[in-house]
Length: 414
Image (tube, rainbow, N blue to C red; front, side, top):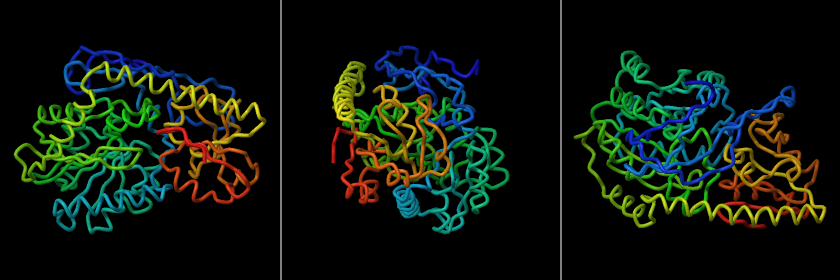
């Protein structure tokens, strides 16, 4: 890595060099680069956020790669603060165990295991669990909670060390991290070496179909290097001795893809889902650069509408706070030009973010008690994928006359 950011010149799935720029979003700091008050005088670096389309394999990706140590070693996102995600992971573990007859005591390895929420669900199913995550503080907390977690990046070398110490894995998972790594081929090499002969690699990633259909452009940020669809992934796995045999759409993060992969010639039959999803992608035109260039026009329309709404409210003297400080909020706020002149403060339920300031714009992040204390007129829900539970929890705010603004997938005022 030369410096904190470098630009690739080849597709990370197929190595092709015919790359077409399809979308230019406003450059931002790393999406989770929240800072303490002591650092407010330091200007934060911003990096390009340009999206490219591979004309050879049709993969959509960022080419500007920020040093992963900057992005992940002091990570502030944890899954366990969201009851929605806890339930999602419990259902996920039950589904995998039932579908693939995972033997009791079998090893489940989670790549990018975060605070161990998913592995805790597998442990409840009677399985042995092991996590790998580069965020050292979060890995230590998970280990103390009884979910053994190796603090580091998953590499073929680490996979070999795990194999010699723990044996082959019945299940390997990677959730919302299979889009985070520049070296996806290295991850798959490690998975192939560590996965038992009848084992399954299960991954969840934001799905390009949902990003496109629902205009979820704010899921584009530096941690997410890849915007996956099934067609390029099928070729990518096949070229590495793996069989991408089934996939399903799931609701998390506004719309994700859950994929199941085995060794080539493995025991699990294809169920037709891969062919169905490829056909849908082709019907939408996601295998053509022109479709994705048109996507930019949809984003600009929402930007114009939301800015008009918020500037009108500010002109009326209304106060606006935001609910949720997810990574995607950084993209939305930068691309739409929403800074401290529009948003007074942000509330978030994560203790790791409270007391910090948002990346670049330096808006204070406070606990949700600040809503009653400061009584804003409007709450802009930046964690829009959790809008329903947030509004349900904030009935006191609504009872006082407060209203909610949901920016995506389409602007709503409630």
